Image (cartoon, rainbow, N blue to C red; front, side):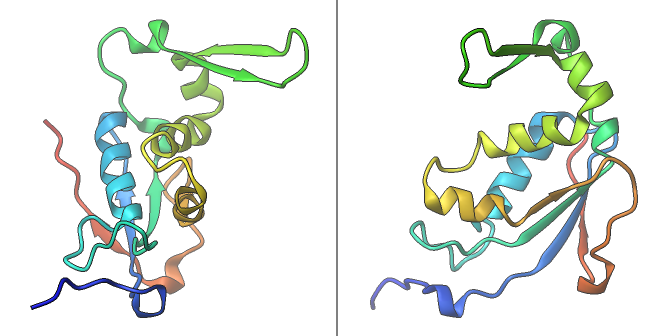
Length: 145
């Protein structure tokens, strides 16, 4: 018996919706990153992008536990002198909730061209509505511990 290796031509992709309302950011991000990689499938192959499309709604209502709202800092640099920008999680959640969720998920993906291809299958929206209804996405429930 030989080990099954999936090729990019045989990948079947599905669409899933994750509602992030009142769910910790880490739980949402780890589930989304795992499904973007395809690790939930029996046909997972590490060197092939075999993941699914993920839609995350209600990014503005994601939960941050503990003191993370004031202590967690997001850094970004423009690559110019003095171009370091610092924002707390409270500012990110109020003004840029989509960017906050995308950053958490992107950090859990591989840092190579395969990871960049996986990241393109992620769609994050601030509210309830999303334009992907024609794809008939399935709803995924996340544990609320």
